[in-house]
Image (cartoon, rainbow, N blue to C red):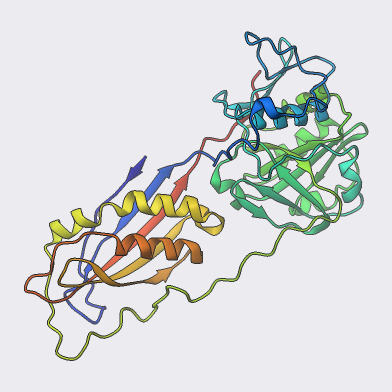
Length: 378
């Protein structure tokens, strides 16, 4: 859903007094992008079954695992569901532990194929305080511990990448908790599940929890920990990548498409026309859908939202003969390029009297994704 809240006014600060300025608030309910299956179900390799999953008659729940399932079994089941195009779930929670174990989470793999769970992922963070790097559907969260990267495979909100990231490594010896908060830097040894819940309850502010575990750890142990997590945390399941994995560096922003000084001066003697406010507003309304599509296709910083101001010079034919970005709080070149292209595609009324007319379109892009999933369904 996208809403436009109009608030047009003339800004005398701009060089040309006839410039019309529109304020758009573009908010969108956008599900985490679901990648297309990498192979149809019939092409999946039979040598990688999910041994702890229930039998697969069409009337049975494919997400149910046996009581003896491990965390590795859960990760393999997530791989199977994604490959079969069955990643989506509207349960609103990650794991159900009553009447058997069930992977109820809506799945959103940050990379494909989803790697198998390693046996002892916590070894990469032993005696290393600090935050862990995480890759989610919405982009990377860079941490301080250089030997560990977690890859989330359940859906989160887009704003999750802005929250302090806390990693929970569930092992047979207890839970290792890693994060940037001072209270976590002094806690290097493993905690019991109850002590972990108490520690999290005492931390100030919200946070994003990424939970991973040893491959052979009983899934019941992970479920027991999830039940102790305070409700104010957003939680995602994750798998650890091989020790030493590095996240790619973010692409540097460029000046492409920018015009911080505004549109160039018109040619000497060029006639200036004007546009009707109501007609201009109706003509630029397609930017609602275009801006959302641009943000989703650009990814990266665009998914975090922010304010972008487009400047357009409309020619006598009713087309934007020039378009550029005056202000850009997001800093994503792909988004700027897409928005400029969308602006050039608009069909606008011809200025009257004949000539050019300049528009400024402040766009406040805010992507609101799916609601945070509860840790457990019990």
